Length: 171
Image 1 (cartoon, rainbow, N blue to C red):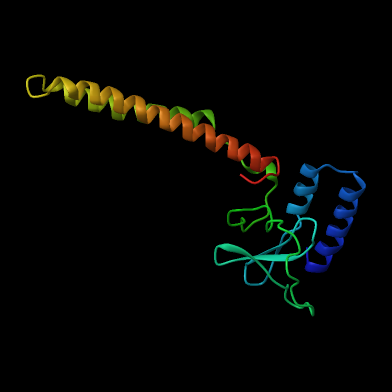
Image 2 (image 1 turned 180 degrees about the horizontal axis):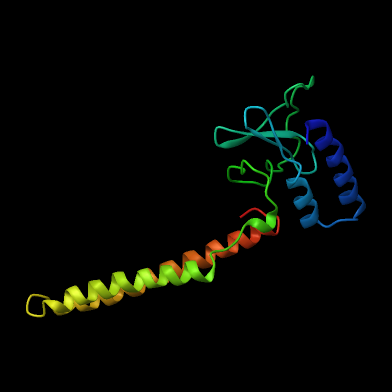
């Protein structure tokens, strides 16, 4: 897709949104598909509602004019944020459904690794009963429980972010 095709498609999508034919989620999903990669590998995207071009360069979205355009970039007229992506865009176009959460096998391996690490630590503490103070047993238990809670929290937040991205929203 080139810049002109993206602009024409943006006009069509924007007209559908204004007419109420599509909801905001569908609007954002379709708008996200209008990304253009230039010859330098930079990603260009049209801003919601305004149609202003933004380029992802040096780790941030910046308002700019696409190569070959005669007009200068227009200042942002409203406090609408740059394109919905807050992270670096992917270099290859993938459908939103390709963002998958870790599978059962991956989660099972991580839990087994967690068990091995903490069982090894518990065994090491209990193997030296005369040299190990009583608080060390509690420290191993609390450490194992704390890391398990943090790991489950990370997996839950990671899963929610992946689902949100798959549905077209920003994570």
